[in-house]
Amino acid sequence: MYKVHYFGGYGAAEPIRLLLAHAKQPFENVDYTQESLAEAKKGDTLEFKQLPVLEVEGKFYAQSHAILRLLGHKLNYYPTDHNQAFLVDSLLDSFKDFVAVYAKASWAQDEEEKKKLFAAFFETTFPNWCAVIEKRLIANSSQKYIVGNSQTIGDFILCTFGFSMVFNEANPGKAPLQEAIAKFPVFSAYLEAQREENKEYLSTRRVSPW
Ligand SMILES: N[C@@H](CCC(=O)N[C@@H](CS)C(=O)NCC(=O)O)C(=O)O
Image 1 (cartoon, rainbow, N blue to C red):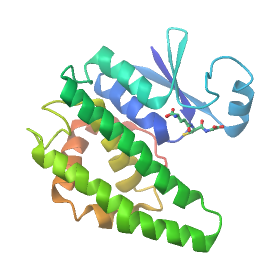
Image 2: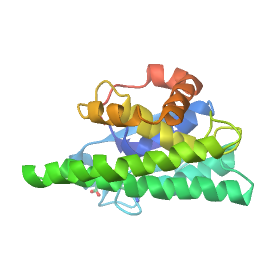
Image 3: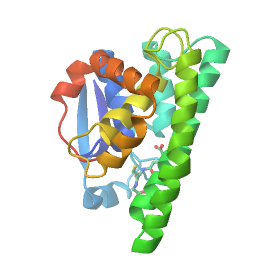
């Protein structure tokens, strides 16, 4: 039994949950609040004092992308071909950069600064990143998957972006993201195909705005 330690929302734990659900591996969520996280930081289970952490048979694994790779190797969602593995890895790295820009804008306290950061995100960061994904999908042998002809951890990352941020009814910031992604037809169709691929989990998971 896997245990996913995280807050009550989707966030950085969601690609891990999507993967486990897709692989039909039962898992349990161990939810934290800021208070219980502060308490947990005093112990040894959170190696970097951060979440998410995956617990497997009493062992605790930290760092979300390393956890995805671990599960990817174990459950066949990480390509054995080096070039395909590179494409997956560079996608994961780019996702971190992209989310950091969005998070910086979301958390900005000063309203003017927030406006400026979001404007830059929607004018540059977002279309540039989507254009890369669009191009990669067109170049791939299948437009249903981001790399190769089967589900990889790259798809779970893109699904998290698609279904936690863009097409999440509970996300108050979804409208400009939806408007911007509509300009990328192959990426949009890919997300529809992925909705089908992950429909069981997506229809039963809890509702969260993030
Ligand atoms: N590189 C880490 C980053 C983890 C991270 O930033 N976790 C945040 C939540 S998404 C956290 O634990 N924040 C609470 C804290 O640092 O006190 C990963 O990908 O797992």
